[in-house]
Length: 512
Image (cartoon, rainbow, N blue to C red; front, side, top):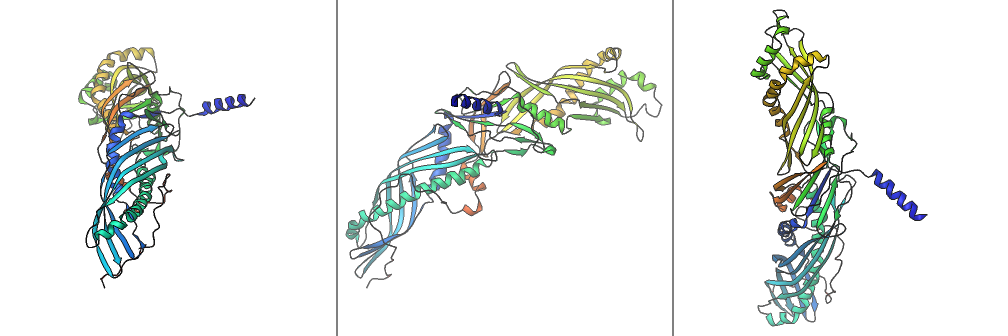
């Protein structure tokens, strides 16, 4: 019985699961590029480590180590890989860094001080970023786990008390190694949960496309991570801005991603494009009115010749009036994606009238237009763009079959004029494109579009148009600037505790 209810609940949950209109896949092919850019950013973050002063007493010696700064960091060996179910793991081994600090030593009444360099070697770091979707539909770094250790520290003490420092070097470097271990993971935790999240905040969730329509890229569930891919599902739906949260039912085929050869793949279903067409239709944007000089000259001559009989029957006051051509879509157009290509079907009314100044319009004809447009989808940078061509075109009268016969001579010339005069205006709007869900600073290059039954996929490689540092510094919260650490859990594998240390006790500034 328990198994029956479990299966029943699973079926109910599946029936109510929202079908994504857009999917995004990042493959393991992208990890080398992401790692290179990420390590540059990580090196700069680790170089901001601040180590507290180390001081104390050992027998007759009173010492103080202060002003510790990271001078150089070298990440020799690193690996970035996916780890099921929701993690991206970075492993660094055999890294090293150079430190500079100020030493002060008091032995009885003798004082020694100065600056010296030290090196931390055999640094191992393993950090895992757990990705999830938040309540607003945005992808986030939900948690950062970290393990870090420094295997050895070396310091070349010299000066008046060089021999005495050799006695204390093990004690002092052990203390510095302990403090350094405690600083690495908080820096990585802050970099993941604060700085990387500020980068992910640049991914559009609900944003306007223009002054009429917006797009919703809310993530529908937590990202799925396999050993070779990271897959994300987005709502991928347009909506009229004036109607707020209006959503359209998604009855399209769910897009599928099978390829892994390119760095990134993005898939769009027919619903993605249908929701755009529906939104613009409901916003009242799918209509076009050409009056007077806006009507192409050849089309104006053709229409006046075709309706010469109707025009001469009008009063002399309106014969030379400007011509008006109005197209109005009657219902939301529909997109169809097949392996052979993408088409959009449109049904619109076409009216032709004379517009005499200060007088009512004189309608010459009204007809219905059925058109099929071929759509060429392209991705440039982060902009998804569409170019439309008029392929099939048919006009007929909604009044009588006889009038439809009379319109046949107009069909071919009118189609040509629409291609030359109207389609460029439509493509001017679609050329602006819409952003896909990628963070700022990342673009697609070498795109390849493939059509399937009910959806299309775009495979591409990634390109960093801006460095992570540039984007993150632009988005970094003002309260965290200059403060590389934040509240963070202790390292998940803390190193052993060093010999006892006392509070910093600076020695006198002069020798007795």
